[in-house]
Image 1 (cartoon, rainbow, N blue to C red):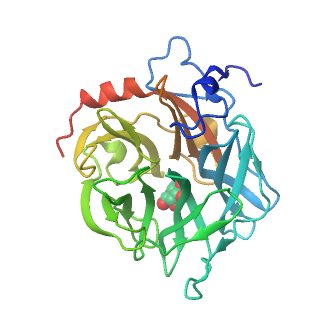
Image 2 (image 1 turned 90 degrees about the vertical axis):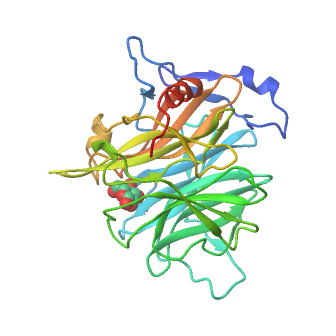
Image 3 (image 1 turned 30 degrees about the vertical axis):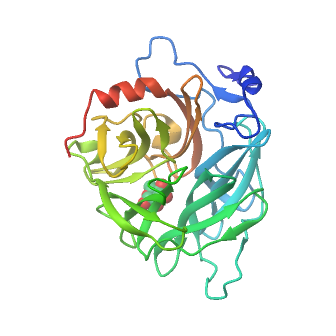
Length: 343
Ligand code: BMA
């Protein structure tokens, strides 16, 4: 086992097949380093995946993982040697050492009108009821939100794309809200979008989406002044939905992607309750500042141990690696409540 990591076995006792969270595998955790006051701290063994993690890919990053039965399963972004990204399934016993399928996911669809996207990237995985839903950036005359479900991480059933192009960063909520499925997304352009705000949409059936509401826009502070986009599936807390997102600033050397946290109202999630003014993680380590795209941290998944409030954050680093960081739910919530949203 890598240094600094505590695998917490007691959790297994308290959990039944259908309890939430479904931590049958041990929760991965590394305590805050001595002397640090950071709200979010990194796994000392970072990065956990990177260049040539599978032979067909030159980088693996921006990926999403969930506990599944006794292990972890994930959907990973792999940038292939032909330059195009695609999605691959991965498995892990400890959430750190991953085995990735060398073959991209083949999405099953009976609808001949649904073309296979030329590329797919930035997956998120959300458990709703008994099904694991995958949202990702799928190509359809530009980037849009692809949607599929699986119950075994072997067969993936493709649904209709959620929105018209161009849209990115589709993130589902883990339960229905006001009787509807709910999703955050970020309308975009077809390139390196110079704008970006988070919107909320709802659907009765995961096919038809509407009731679109503005949630939050680029911030007043530099670190997120160009654009923002949702990161991980929101975490339900007594105070609201805890959302990890990315915020982007512009510099003389290009864009810089950092990580932020916001609190959304539980019943009306387009109402922003709190927003931590500064980034909670900025590119700093070599694997974040150096890579295919330097200076990027891009959260796509967070594991939550409800009983301890421990959070394990999976994020893409420099469009090259998957890295892991940790935080405590209650510390973030206190900080968010101390910073009520004004915009
Ligand atoms: C965004 C997305 C992400 C990527 C980021 C930084 O527009 O394409 O996949 O990590 O840019 O390059």
